[in-house]
Image: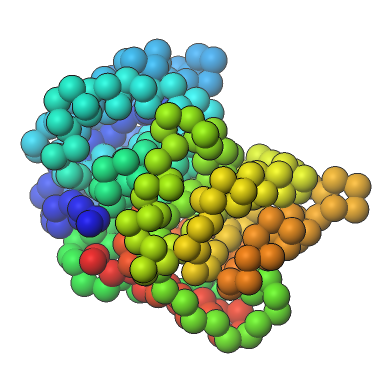
Length: 339
């Protein structure tokens, strides 16, 4: 049974933390101002504004303790991550130790982010059935005015009604990371596709996934609870949402092959695949080849080039929710239910 946190409302407190990298200092104050203008109070942990050293905001135990402090703070109803990064996985042993020691799985609040933050979200959902949100980290909230996709995470958790999204008309192929007052550079027409060429697809299942680069480090470790998690929902089936940040096409195929062979895709009903951030060809082997050889052989729908991941704007994806996917001629509608 999935546990859905408290309905967020205006006046609630949101905690900011840096479980991976610290925030872009050029953007943080403007981002906080915009979230406050939406009606929320903000508190932040110390490491959020630290300079990054060796790719992280602080020592792993410090980062874990700051997250745990927000998790245990009754006033905090949502935790937003400052930024993605590289080494969030270092914090999981410390977070897990505290969860088990203090029965912290009895607490339930919204945690959100993407990229390296997948490591924390995936842990919370697959180990404790706590719904989590793959969506924008803090820095994008410096945008003025806010793109409508940035409002969706707040809309999604403000009630327990069905949450519906469809893919956006345009997306950006290049990001201006250091501009403090910016809009997405929406320079590409959006058109998602089905891997086998189908024009009309419908499927349902329990939603889980994240950034492939991060999911790759879980396989076969003591943190890999995927088999137990998906087995709970074998009658409903599983929908995997996946996106690639740093892997080339051969890397993506190897990873999908390994996930498939370890039976992560057992009970899969379909895949939602984000636009790839890199995935350079290896000789004549392409990203499309990686998807075909990695998951195309499973004979389930694979919708790709969706608004998921690093090439923004992106959907709000609620790990653990019951999802319905309707795809017709390059448009995809995703319904997520809190059941």
